[in-house]
Amino acid sequence: MQPFRKARSRIVAAGTLATLLLLAAFAFAAREAARRIIVSDIDDELETLSVAIASDLEARGVADVSHESLRAGLEANTLVYRLEHHSAVLFDDRRIIAASGDLARRARFAMLASFARRSERPFNATEPFSPEHRVCRFMVTHLQQQAAGTTLLVFRPIDAVARTLDTIDLALALLVLTGATAAALILGISVARALRPVEKITAFTETITPRGLAGRVTVDAAGEEFDRLAAVINSLLARLEQAFDAQRRFVSDAAHELKTPAAVIAAYVLLPRGPIGRR
Image 1: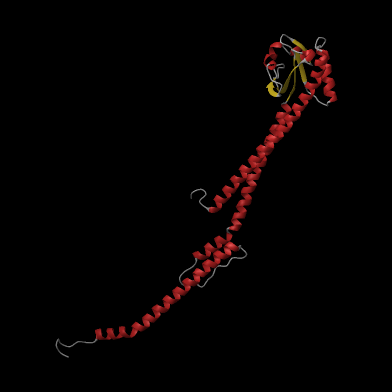
Image 2 (image 1 turned 90 degrees about the horizontal axis):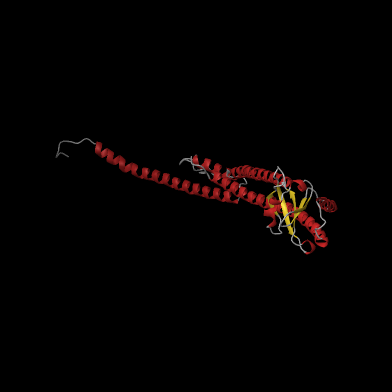
């Protein structure tokens, strides 16, 4: 048997596919919305820190800025704004002026060349400062006023964000598969129940013989469509019954009318004959 030859299979397959596509579109939209919300929160944190630190540096200059002072300023702002896991590097076109935390001893000026050319928009990149080479969210601020010519780089790791998005992806994938499977089961059961009257009508019509036309199709609360189908079939059976009855009556009448002439002919044929010419 060819696949999807039955209408039931085609209906279930089409409904399941439509459900799968709908759920997949919903999952994609939900995932993108979650990603945008999470990334937007991170970007707000980066912008908050960058503005707070940059405004202080632009106001007083960078002549007396040291690794320790930049670390203290970063920690003060992260405490005020309830942030964490952020790092900062201040540099110009010749050297690193200051860096926070472990960056003070790990960062090298050559590592910052690609960041100096970036626009002031948050972006994802692999940080080159540690052996882990973590994926981070960066924001570059090109300072003005008293700190003109210097660049502030603020960033934070987003490994946890990536794990969160992976968890969301897994949950949404399970939701899509579960929803599609449930839709297939529900459609299969619903279509089977909906087509049960058709199977009943089919089974009944397969048993009809020329001598059994008196039976009629019955469907119990199957719906208006199946009631109409049963009525049409019953009407057809009634007309066939009338036609067969009329045919039987015609054959019976014809046999009766032909009975006497046939007997006469038979008797004539069977009468003994004398010699030719004798009467």
